[in-house]
Length: 341
Image 1 (cartoon, rainbow, N blue to C red):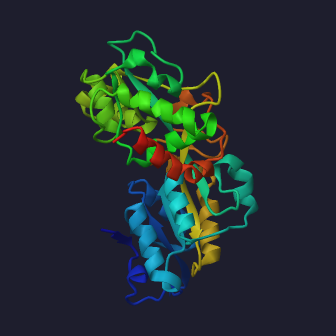
Image 2: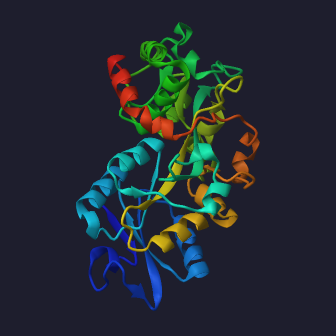
Image 3: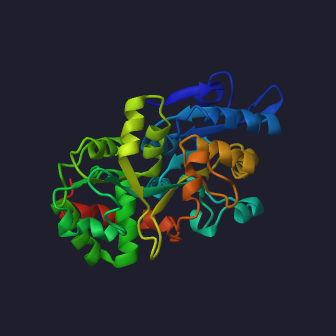
C-alpha cells in the first residue's frame, strides 16, 4: 500500500488542489519507490534552496505507475522516482513520462545514464557483482559473468529468482553483449550450477555464501556494503568472509544499473519538477542521494561514501541503460526457457 508522508494533503486531494500553493510557495508532488531516511535531507535541502514544498507518496514502483495511469490527467504527480532501468521502461511504455529539456541535466548526467529522448535520468549507479566465499577460494574464482555457467562451478551458485528485475537487467545486458542464443546457453549453464532453488533477496545470497550453502553468489554491491557497515557483529562477520568481484574488467566492464527519476506527463508543476531534477544532480544532492543506498553517484567527479572509494576506478559497462529495459521482455522469455525459476 502506498505510504503518504510530509505534505500529503495535495496528494489526497484534501484541502489543496493539485496546483495549489502552500504559504505562497509552489509545491512539488513526488511519487517515489525509494524509502531511505536520508531522502528527507534531500527534500529539506531542496525546500530550503527553492521554497518549493515537497509532498511525497511512497510505494512499490508498479503500484505507483498503475496509480498515475489510473489518475490520468487529474494526477497530481510531478516526478516519478524509482530504481532499475526495467521499471523506468515500464513507466515509459505506460505513457506517463514527459521529456525534460535541461542543459544542466545534459551536462551533468552521462549520456549512457539517461534516456535517449530525455524521458528519465539516472541519478545513482548500482553494480551487480559476484560474491565468493574466501574460506573456499583464496582468490577470486572467476573474472567474467560468462564464467558463472562454467561446469566447474556445478552446485556452487546462489542467486535470486528470474522474477527479480536486477537479474533480468543483467541478462538483458548479456543479450546485448553476446546475443540471445549465447545468453540462453549461458542461462542454462547457470541453472545447472545452482546450489539451490532461487530464493530470497540479494542479502540472502551473501548470507548463504558465508554459511557455506554455496561458494558463489550474485547480487548488487550495496547489499554487501550494508552488512559491512552494520552495527551487528554477525553482519560484519558475514561481510568479512565474503569477497566481492567486479566482473568483466578485461572487456566491457561490470554491469551497472541506475536509480532514476522522470517528470510525469501532465505534471501540474513542470518548472518545479525540472528544478527538482536539476537539484538532484548537484554535488550536494548527489552525495545525499547515493549515500541513501550506498550507491555510486551518477555525476562524474562526485566522491562516493568512503567504503566505496576503493572501487571508483573499476571499469563499468558503458551500454546505455535504456537498452536494459528494451531487452527486458526477451530476457524474461529466455530465463523461462532456460528453467530459471
